[in-house]
Image 1 (spheres, rainbow, N blue to C red):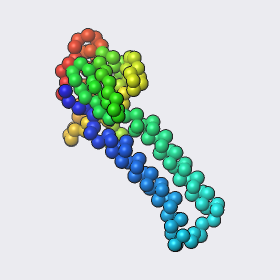
Image 2: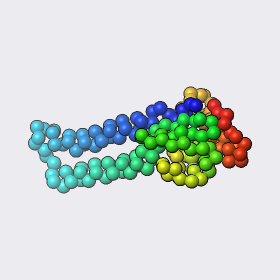
Image 3: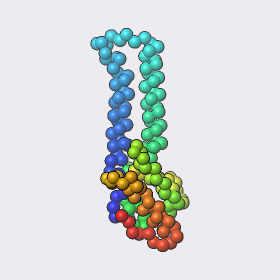
Image 4: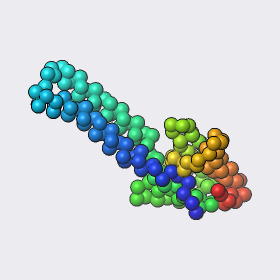
Length: 165
């Protein structure tokens, strides 16, 4: 058994949104506390600032909800199945139940998506950020995804597939 997901997922799920919320609050509070409470802001300028901050906050919230908060907190490889944890909930996903493995691994966003044959408690897809391994070989970034693709194929064909990195 070993963990194949990144141990830093919690930073993107908890720390970054908190930091962005603080930045948004600063944009709202800075004009209020500047110049000893004496603001030169017109009501229209204040409204534009409020709408801009609200729109930015809404955009960030929607993006985090769609792309970050749906990520599994931890994925452990146990040979013929994976243990997926999000929050306090855990589920065992047999490799034979995975219909497709899709890797999106760029310099900005690394994701592996497991499309399930039947929905789990986390839905019909499991998304996680794979553990990053240092390598000068760009193809090495796909090791976890390639291993899962091969083993899922073996499991679906009934060939076992319990060997793993």
